[in-house]
Image 1 (cartoon, one colour):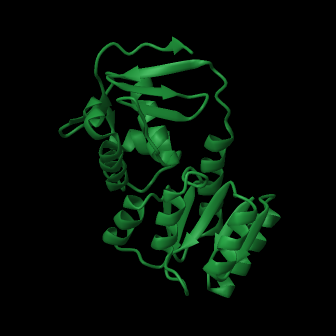
Image 2 (cartoon, one colour):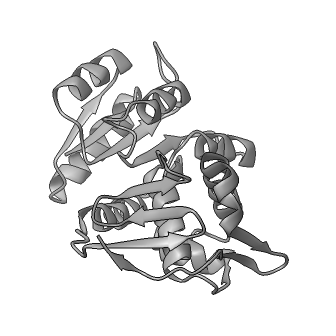
Image 3 (cartoon, one colour):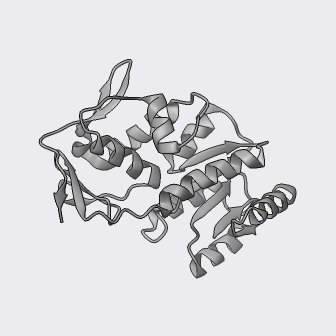
Length: 231
């Protein structure tokens, strides 16, 4: 199930029709109050969220989603006519997994939705844990423990950390990370990676030191012996 919160009836009706026609069950809402009522009944697989809304703006809604343990990991794509770098960074800083500027093509939106759904539907059944410094990742549970404390990460933050730790010691450029984590060409917007690295380090606290910036190249993870272990 996909939830779409969009107050523009033309966009809302078109996107809902197109997604349903593509086999993606979608429920749309004009008002945040109706959206929250639906969230109380059922948590969706993904949320498409406009920023400029009546009753409550999209960034406030996003922050509330991320602050609740029941919804913190639900992928969110921001849909907005605000196309400045500041607005994009603000949305990503608040925990958005992706950002689509209006006007957008429905095929582009479908591609981004499917890229996220492929990742969330892939079940990692390996009974292993991954280590880097005092960070422990349990892929089968989608859990991250740093210095003995469970860390609440967004989907993209988790996937980014998991990729770096799985490939510890290897340096990845921003463009490579965009391809590996976001799954498509993000038009060279390497700022997206930098924002996610910054928020990831902030959430990990001192443990975030395992993520190293390689000036002029990109990022890598390091820190102590890091082998997989059975759990």
